[in-house]
Length: 282
Image (cartoon, rainbow, N blue to C red; front, side, top):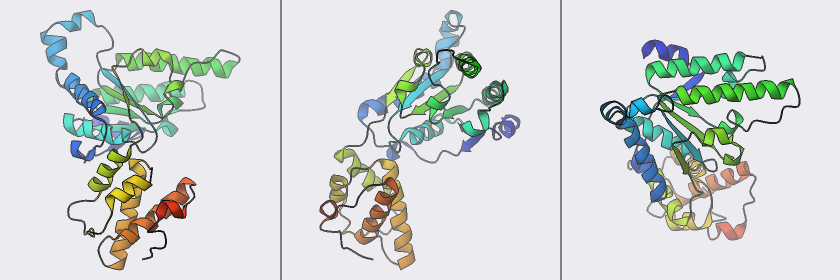
């Protein structure tokens, strides 16, 4: 595993799993499917070897999962939790290093990724998977032909890989149907509703963080329709503002951080949305 890791890090980023199930806020059905995925990995030896299913399956003995949903809804977080739960290493494949404009280089890079990951029994995470697992196109020129060859090669490697592959995308319709037929799990990560946003706000603050009792979690969940990833950004920024001020995390720190996050998202800070805290200053 140590030898394989040295090769993998040249094409993928190792993620050290730190979070667990209590950090994940999703509908119960999505959590149930994630737990079923864990069960399938844990009991592979019993089913394939002890029960003899291995004789009926020459390919497709790994676990391939597609996580679909908008950015910040918990897809990468879930992959991290699965890795920690299963005691496996998690590598996020860097598409900028894998995909090459030179003919044949992409296949070589992918071959290295799958071979080294197989040796170390690692979970492979392909973020924005539609860029690599996209639909094959009609052949109009040489570029289309080689792009389709890359997709065909990827199909073969996915099917022969006996570990866990997680694909994440917010454009599931762009995934080639040949890949979707090979999926063992397709889990949707919906945009959080008010109930789930409330849980995210409450859980995002660590127990040891000095949070003011006046922080209005219900107000934050009701007024601001943002994903968990954005809430994490807001909470972290508010914590730094509070630390710089030398005090507790107040509603004023959160409101200012929300305004900054809205600017990043290109959203307008409507007074009616922020009232009665719009003019709150640090």
